[in-house]
Picture 1 (cartoon, rainbow over the protein chains, first blue to last red):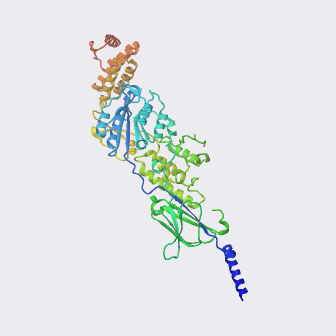
Picture 2: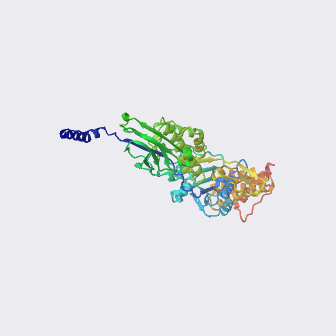
Length: 300
Length: 263
């Protein structure tokens, strides 16, 4: 009798010590990936900045077929643009022509668009300046990148190349600095074809230069009266393991996204992929949950 | 499509052949070499950058939605940060090359625009003072309104007078070639301005300035022709010896005599 009891205990011990671990179910595995977009709120674009170049070189005295001279049209166009600039715009004017010989023109400044418009209206064509040099001077005056990217340069000119200079290089450098350029051409001269090759620099604007940190997630056991967190992590982390069973996945998005419940079966890999573009509203969110069976789940 | 230089990807154009430029950019983006540069993923985006034709439906959907999102941001930035908006549209084209909205955005946001606005003459002198409507980019394209003040006969006498004064200053500074060119333009402008007395008076003054420059440059025959034009405009023209070079005064009288002899 005693011997039988000892045998029973020995067998039970053997079963506990060796048999159970060999049959314990392997854990479930989970990967979470979030494809996100721009933040819901971006910094305000700021005040527009307008730089008007008025070509009052001697060549602008030539008449236009519609009437008036190129210079008169340049003055009228520039004055109208200055008066029509959005309130609060940063304004500046550079006049090409004058006493210098093929220089970069002269900057005239005022914060009052009406004063600038009146000053422009009184200009008189004389001398000649280099449009390329003027663009270089404008770029040099845009001290910081933020100001440069808020700036539109508008040049009223006949593109007479009396002073030479590399217009395409100057225009390209201006665009590289972040400013847009409009050439308002008065008269029949064609713009250099190389201007068509100028493209904005690649890469994101400053507001999108930094990606938002990946959101966190947690997995809660389903069916428990109190939420019980099985595992938590960050989207994009390597595959995590967790006890098999029914569970919900909660992603810390805005608003939070709750997926499931799923049966996170033993040995399987559950891949959760979420698209979250909050600026598009509810239509900017989608997800796909895929379960890779145990036999195929070796590779995440 | 050859690969663009690695330091600068410049492909698309303003008005100058916009359609061709857009096609060029689209081709550039389709090319394998180009796909590495302008279509490289931005921070937080999957790598390699998917597009709307990705075989993975979720990635394709993300690419379409991301292009829509960036387009929305670009539209917000266009008025104030046009080049930033341009960068967004170019990236959106990588994500969704077939989107009409993206192509429209690209067309709107060319970094350099060459604009040739129409110039119209207005009846009211104050018409040009009226601010234009729309964004700065729209305003640049609006017609330029010139006042018709003093229009008609000699409508731009102010401009002509300004040219004449400038030509006079150039001659006083011994810049005879520049002065001659300016005076010739003033004379052309006066010829185009009509045939009234005020205009003819300007034509005569311009021709005398041409002659003055030509005499200084030793071009006597040309000076003679210029003074004949001056007398054609104002047969009774006389020059003040106190303020005019004796050579010019003598040349004028010679031209007058030749004119009478011809008759």
